[in-house]
Length: 338
Image (cartoon, rainbow, N blue to C red; front, top):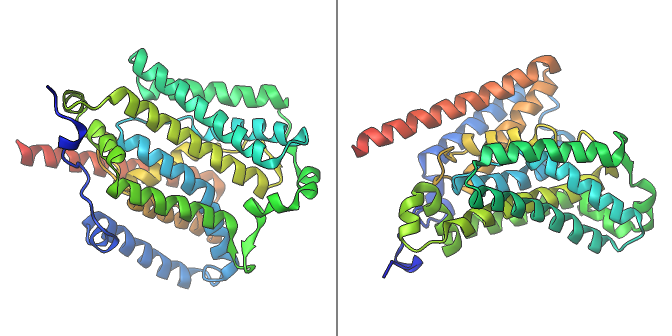
């Protein structure tokens, strides 16, 4: 009789926040962020103003929610290139429901459920037809973006009038606590804390780690790896759906270009934060530290007036460097093990 999941050793150690801070990768990231923050303080007098910091933190909210979803699917050994396009398509669906006069809560449920359904479909195709995450999510990215253009005719959808009818719903993307802390930031932080706890403490997430680190061993141990992969796909897409709700309320509409490049931001943040492209490794805390560093880099380029023509080059160079470092670390680990 095969081992049950109770017999499976935890791939990710159960550590507290203080123990996590002692981890070399996270500590290095924190130090880099602090040094970079000091540099920006001297380089631009605008950096430490609350207006600028609030802009950075607000921008991190939607990207952060998607980064959490990307971290989970990377840990499972997968990848999702469609997350930005799924976010935009979910917004279109949610906006259409909202414009019919439906209750905003219903619109939110439909939006998130629609995104989750896309994740389920991707997971089913990946597991049942034995296709790679790269191919399936790449195709989904193109199809979702095509549906956005087809449903909107390439024109943005305005929600200004509808949101005026339900001002309480505007709080989700435009409200704040005490006029200081954005509500969208609180939603993001609540999800981040919950998922960080689940990553360190829950049995389901240990199955995700084990599946990503050694799929064959996980199967022999009694873990239903297909279910784990599908669940990771659903969660990642659902995060895109939740981010889409905040985004469309924040901007009172749906720009058809929304979500462009979001997948690369999420992947970059996760890899910089310690998630392995080979699966089985990573933390939510580390991934969000990676996002913070990416957000500071973007903010620095804007404050220092770096031409937009060079910003993509710099961003993707950072991603390539992070991947190279990850591969080097993986090779060193294999040599030590052999």
